[in-house]
Length: 206
Image (cartoon, rainbow, N blue to C red):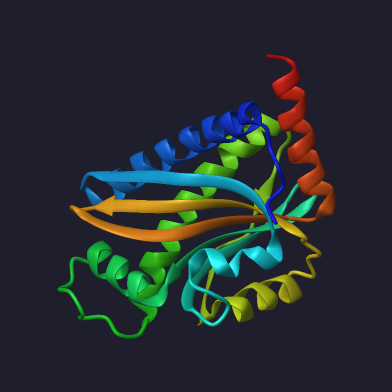
């Protein structure tokens, strides 16, 4: 189930998201020399076991860009696309025709990782600015597999004990095409407590 946030707390989460995705859209537009819009129809804090259902189920084939986040707490950030959507966004990034990419090579994987790096970095900068703590993150990696296997594999690889995730349902509009993905930030239990406490503290100060 989702962690129940008040309307005001969700509003604060929305403010953070607006800053992050706005900066990401600007960075991507500069990289591509094309108009880029990013919309986030929903932003929630959800239990990790509920996440696969938000993108088609645990057996959905996906491509994910992810990196490790190190701060006062540990975590992982990832941008996840259904694999067909990931192929299409790579085609757009590389100016290739539709259905010309059916498997990732070094160039197409690098393009997806760069998109993920810009988006994830922009959102996390906005989030950690709100938390008023510094953070570092690793070089982005990419994996293609079923969604549940991706989540389990990343948690094992990073020795991360995450129970909940900040989830942004994300829609990219690039060159008049719309592509949906999920942004996930998986902090350890201490991290999710820090985020929720900061939302409550900010809310009480309003």
